[in-house]
Image (tube, rainbow, N blue to C red):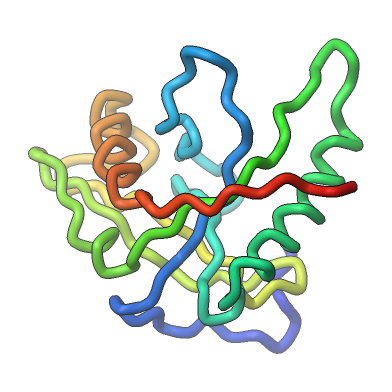
Length: 163
């Protein structure tokens, strides 16, 4: 993944917010599926991308980023593999994400990760307890983390791309 040339990672204060784009979900699909946290071999981590609202501070700026992303996604779609459209984004407070702990002590980090020319690009990273590695976490532990994380993303800003 290409980082932003000359950009440095910045600490993200707890009082700031991050937003996550959402696609339309088929009937019966759990809304928590907006987060997956699959293991990324390149990063050696389990991360999901969000936008730091410091650099995408208006709703229109988040929607613009997601609409550009949607054009790329839909260009890759095929009749046999149609993709559900972008429908808006959810927002959460960084401090609220960082205080999440599962019963077994797993948690999250929120890390500024400028990428592909976008200073707003940020990662939510799973931080396992000391008994396991991020790669070897149990699926049930990851599901518990996702459930707790999704409960923090209550603000939804709907959108329909025009092109």
